[in-house]
Length: 92
Image (cartoon, rainbow, N blue to C red; front, side, top):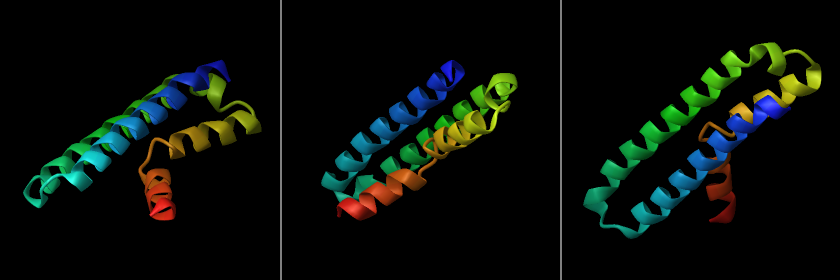
């Protein structure tokens, strides 16, 4: 589970940065919003690629037992925008 910590950190940092950008883009004028949307897309892509890369590098440890496979997939899920979208929909 020690090898899973970098993926969790990447997911947390990605979600935090996107949350800050999302809050700023909701309060900015409408002509700036598409620019911030593209930046959020790039951050999501970089976060997903970093998480998948770390999972591939550490696959010998992360994909050995059933519990670590489930934990790895859950951590990789949080590197995607789906949990963020769910949180935004549920809080608004």
